[in-house]
Amino acid sequence: MRLPPTEEPGATGSRRDLRVCFFGDSFTAGVGDPSGVGWVGRVAAAARAQGHDLTVYNMGVRRDTSLDVAQRWLPEARVRLKDGQAFGVVFALGTNDVDMQLGQVRVPPDRSLAMLAAMLDDAHAALWHTLVVGPPPVLDRQASKRAADLAAAMAQVCTTRSVPFVDVTELSADPVWSQEIAAGDAYHPFAAGYASLAALVEPVLLRWLAGMPADLSSSDGGGPLPPAGSTDLGPARAEGHPAQR
Image (cartoon, rainbow, N blue to C red; front, side, top):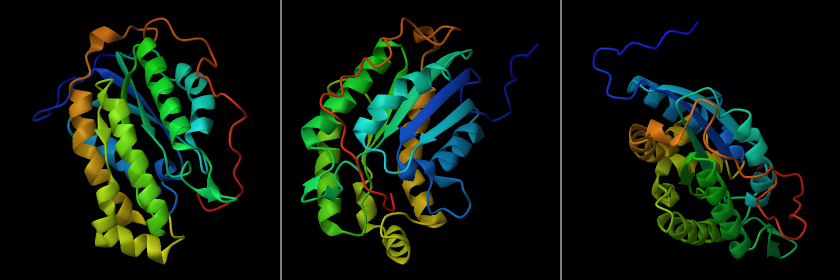
């Protein structure tokens, strides 16, 4: 039998059993970080250091767009967000959506925003708390501009739903981030770059966890779940060629 965790001296976080899924692409997976920690591992460590009893599920998949995440996230979250006291979902995506293929982006911005809105609404219906992280800049300036434009629109989708949004476009002015993606594959940083990304996400995520009320969830993983496949993907999803992301 598992005993309730005791409060550690100096801990500021909640000792409730928190379960959080992080859905996204290769940045979520931490590709390029030789330590294997990535930004998700760093913010998880910071949360635990603040006293949060946090279980993290990293669901990052290379080359995934918002359409790909929308297709898989709900059944993957359903089997993980249970048996705890409070549950959350972090969506961190957008870079692959704005990737150019055959003269057009893989996912048009209106589709990206519709997918994000549907996922947030489905998570709300399941009584899971949500947080969104926007796409980071890459070496290509035009791609970074498209990512920044998408991030601004994603922020509006989140604002209308009172969902916290982390804009990481300021990494374009971070010399460590810029140097590492230039030295790597033009997309992914190394350990120090991921630390810069984590530093932007960490304060928002810590406030989000601290304000996560347990009364919106139950021991079976929340309230009534939307049916599997409830997110409308519309026409066939955009397919991508094998590449770095």
